[in-house]
Structure formats: C-alpha cells, structure tokens
Image 1 (tube, rainbow, N blue to C red):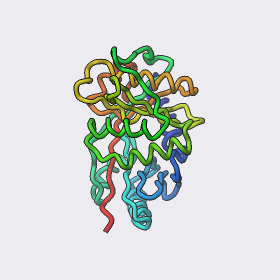
Image 2 (image 1 turned 180 degrees about the horizontal axis):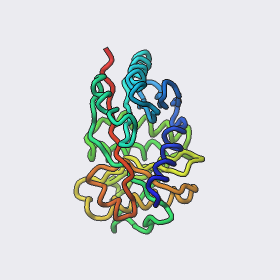
Image 3 (image 1 turned 90 degrees about the horizontal axis):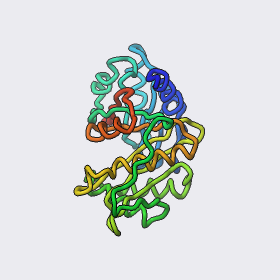
Image 4 (image 1 turned 120 degrees about the horizontal axis):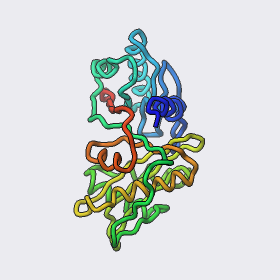
Length: 260
C-alpha cells in the first residue's frame, strides 16, 4: 500500500469531500473547513480544514460562534498531518478539550483477510429492525459503559432513511448478544468505515472481534469499496494489523467549550 497516496485519497474523498451521512445531517464548507452539522443533538464536527498560521485562530473562533448560534457543542476531528502543526495547541487555547488519540488504520480489501468466522456456538445476525437495535445497544452499554439513547436513535434513523449505507450486525450466543459492530458506507467513495466494534467480557480473545471485522469486510467488498478505515484504539490495533490493516496517521477528537 502506498501510504501517502491512500492518505491523500482519504482526505479528498472522506474528509474534504464529505457528504451527508444521516437523517437530517448536512455538510457545509466555510472559513477553510468542512463541517458536519447534525440535526438536533446529533453529532456535529469539523471534519477537514485547510488552514495555516495566519488563518487558524479566526477559523476556530468562527466555528465556535457558528455552533454556539445553533446551541450545539461539537468536535474538531484533528488528524496528525493537519496544518498548522500546532493546530491542537490552538484548539486548546480556544477552550477545546482533547480526548485520547486513536490511530487511523486502513486496509486494502484486495489484501485483507476475509475468511474469519465466529467461534463455535455464535451466529451473526444482520440488524434491520428495532429488536436488533436493542440487542446492539445492550452490547454497547456493557462494553463501553455509555448511555445508548443517541446510538439507538441514530441507528434507527439510518436504517429507516438510508439502509443501503449501513451494515449493522450483532453476535448472538444462543439468544444472548455478546458482540456488535457496524459498517458505514458513502456510495461513490472507495472507503467504508468500521465503527462500534465491541465484545463483552467472557468472549474476548476467542476470535469474535476478528470475525466481526471479516464479516464487514466482505460486505464492503460486495458493495464495491476498495478500502476499509477504522479509528483504532490501542487494544484493537494489534488484531487489525494481523488482519492486514496499516496505520496512516493519528486522529484526536477535540471537544468544543461548553455553551454558555
């Protein structure tokens, strides 16, 4: 894989060329940035920027003003190669808070392993309705310890409005959900994203995470995508590397200041 070429393609197609990816979401370009504006309290973020030392501070201030006017907090999704080099420091000076960094990893679907199956006694169920969403939410609550109200709403909305852009799957041991994950796609791009992969205690280290990745990789290939991308935590990076993923850069969420 030509890392520089794939990273440039990712920037162009996924970030600078971002498209609306959920019910009510819109993508806007202003003040040197591309931003996703979610409906209501849906996730909003700056996805891409073309800034330098003379324009960055005003661009940051402009985004803070814009989202404050909407009554929304938002995320500035900063990548390790974004300019200026001190953009993270400028965001912190403006009141943003950095979340833990992750690694942007990409796999070429012509090279990634696609043959992993779930462990014995586990089946993978495609999520298509409210009952499936409930099963996914149960896994997310157990694995990540987060409130799942937004996830339920977003997933249900996307299944209703754009089911062809989402492959959501839950792993069942008998009737018990023990893992879940989703694939999000943007038609017309060469990338598909892996999100929300998680395995409950007692099932880790048994090949289930690997099987969930392979299942979604097969789905992405069938939909005509060339690359899989994932924002990987340190715990999942070794598994992904064994499957053929390669690190391209880091990505750090910077959370906007609270709205006064």
